[in-house]
Amino acid sequence: MQKVPYGNSNLVVTLYFVMKMLPMIISGMCIYLGYKLFVLGVTGEASLSVQSDTISGQLINAAPGLFFAVGGIVALIVSIVRGVQISFDNNGGHVVRVSNIAHG
Image (tube, rainbow, N blue to C red; front, side, top):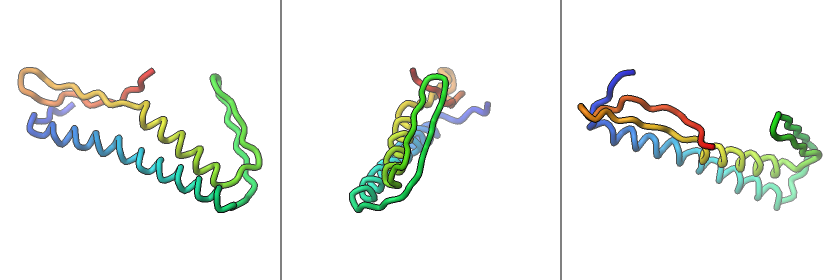
């Protein structure tokens, strides 16, 4: 991987902050818009079924606002749980590795 000079580490930290905050803002907007759709009484018939080795669930005949809210909540949880590991070289002060990690 290409080494980045230490002076650009502020850029790395800024981009990390932006990439963590942007999904949270979008998720918050989805949750809010889902709430507004639910309160306004927008109706529709939609179903969602999720099955995995560890989790399963069904949402049957749900309002569209509920899908917005649930999608926003899932995206918010994923953006919080995901992490980024930034490694610096001690000798030259270079960023040597930026990688995604999952906590837990």
